[in-house]
Image 1 (cartoon, one colour):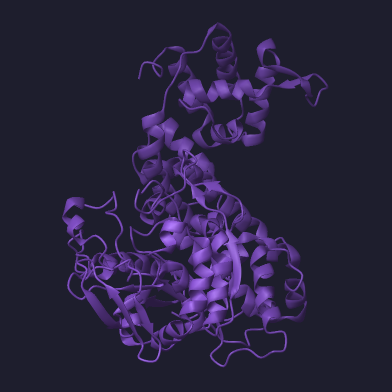
Image 2: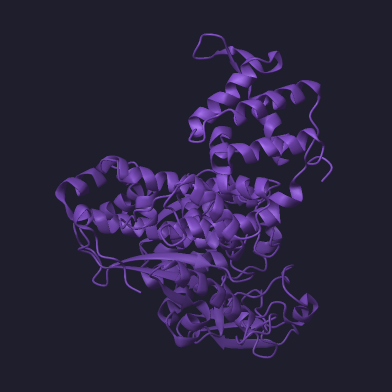
Length: 554
């Protein structure tokens, strides 16, 4: 895969001038890299972006978010420099790390217990796939999704880099600078940990386990370390060739120095360690990269999402119910704000994506640069007509009990003549997502209630009003009809609001009642638009069912 060329608009002088002052966060980050090389002395191989991946559990959305967001900064940098500077994105897997605990969300977890503390690429694959290790399996899951989304990246494995000798020179430098590294690390540790700490982690040649043991001697000239293994036997190992890896904090800085990384983003949980990574990078002769710290994702209970717990939404789960563009929008929006990541956020993300997409063609350059779809699509923004919102499709499924696309398209083609699955493939894709989302999340939670006396009166009036509406009444007219009913019932009058005629406005309690009684849920779409899509007679019949007690008894 190759990066798409910049568009003619992006290469224009006016566009680049606006980009230089754009407040969109990818441009703010990209300008840091431009400033880093203010003299124009870019590396011969180009600017290097990196993302890190810990394959101790199955890939989750946070991992994807790093690559998506970094790619957005990379594209912004290309715009600022007129695509005159080569760029590379490395997705680096820390798969030589020892498996500290068995993940909760794998089959037959007991079978992995004997392999604790072994590098992840030496742990058998619990999924019994074609991969030869747990680390390789999880790496493949990550690459599969990144490829599906169309990212351009270079995958890198810590196991490969350590064993192939790619890190040998910087490891030898780490041995020469051993005391300086210890001087950085020891003040950050407790007294007990200080006594046993070493930046070098030997891999036991007998057991294959990563050992957390103190060093008895570090011979910088010979490039060796001496230590006692788990059985108390003194061993000396070469620090090169994959015999030894670095502790994770020194490893961060070492990797930056070895590869010449210019930009890396990481979660807030790394923020306190960023100064340590920078110091070690400089000790090893490198230049610390530019940073971007993002907030962590939370689950529906407000707890941090964990790969090993599997308490968030997986990549595959999101894509079961929504298009990838909606996930990219979720990653773009407010990256420095902690956000809950659970299934309820999906419908809003889908609708917001298509709202931003619809607005793009009407915007000027400054507005386009701030529009998320510009960054999601790397400047190549598609033109898509979406006549019906995803949330509306969900409510259509709910009211109609539709079980397949054909039933849904019967409603849609009546609402928007000339619209079909062939002419609107994006809408057809959303229909499929809506059917799955409704079946798995909306339907199990539906809870209809019976109307009380006043609510019955309101529903009866609404039913009569709907049946007297002209056949071509649009959503706005039908919404007005519902509002007229509500204004005539004291319970639903809101004296803090004013109607167009100067009387009281309508309380949101009226529409909440409609959703609870007719749809079995607390929230719903704009009611008039829903009636226009579902049909006035069908909606009136739905009210009949509610008044007869058939919905609440279902």
